[in-house]
Length: 450
Ligand SMILES: Nc1ncnc2c1ncn2[C@@H]1O[C@H](COP(=O)(O)OP(=O)(O)OP(=O)(O)O)[C@@H](O)[C@H]1O
Ligand SMILES: [Mg+2]
Image 1 (cartoon, rainbow, N blue to C red):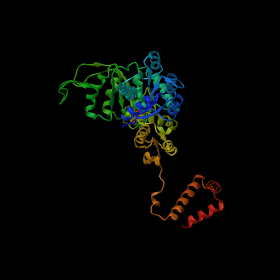
Image 2 (image 1 turned 90 degrees about the vertical axis):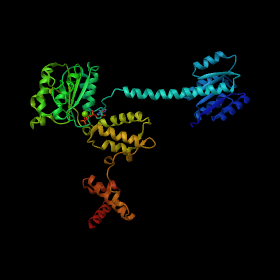
Image 3 (image 1 turned 120 degrees about the vertical axis):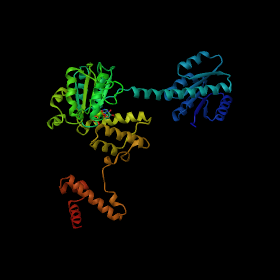
């Protein structure tokens, strides 16, 4: 069980001893003193969950002590002990942050109830705080993090483009944040409270695509036992995100083009023309222009959707975003998993900054999530990062070797790597290694002779 520490400040020795006895027998850890100055000393040195303070102290007013304690340790709860006639100071005490007061003489039971009330209150307060954090995380605006030129430009474009109904084409490698940007545009647009429908063109088989997009009437094909609205109609009034548009089957491309141009279509098996008002966002990881050249994407559709292209560079081309993203995700996951925000050793930080992230921001995000879950004592070290980031050093080949031999191997490795760094300039290498040119030369000679 959690130890609860209570401080008693009262100059009546008999009362003090009596209280100490009662509280210790309940399992509380108790310290006591008779003066305000001693109490302040104690509070400065250690944390007390609760202080019981007599309003009248030999060296001053208990109310002043209350204020001082609250300054040093705002988390410490205070219960004031007043004489029967001192209602005014009791009221003042509550105003100054005391949790409760007891007037003398009081029953043992009254005191224990007051303490339990305080502990209950404190645990509820804690719980409320946790709930508030998770609620704000849950509701929390997802933001596009980064200070690079590219991210700043994209952020500006999001502000402007969200306000107009022009189609947008977001282009970038996997994990660069295409969907996040699409979501931000939708959330900032006047259509934010209207439907937001997403279709992943890679995920839907070609033969089901039309039905999915346009919907169908009952009996339109075998298995169509009910009529069903398509994604286009569901998105009416709102926004439609067509993800991985490069994977849209060629056979469907003219059909989509027609919708984009006329805002009308027929559900499968229906004579009912449907008119829609939809804002389109397209995402692609593939270079559509190249697909057009290869004949895999229709050029008329390409021109139609490429009105406003938003290109997101891969993370390795905007490494100045890394510190911001690292910070952001550490905060995010610490909150999510209710852990303290960890420190990162300089080795681990350097590794995080040096890596090229073929999986872009998504990869970084997963690496940090894993590190937060793995790390001990709130410190992320190199060991908590995936192997790709740790940098290979040939320790394995050293195992079970004679120590002298290990030293030689290591020396050889270091000398050759340094020479490489110095582009073969021996004088420079010798200087860096702290040996003479002659020694270096001798050592190199020895390596060659092996
Ligand atoms: N600049 C950024 N700031 C904050 N989070 C980001 C940023 N870029 C990407 N993310 C996060 O990285 C993850 C991957 O992003 P997203 O799903 O938008 O990528 P994508 O480009 O759509 O990838 P894919 O092509 O694989 O679908 C998401 O969790 C997203 O919130
Ligand atoms: Mg995506």
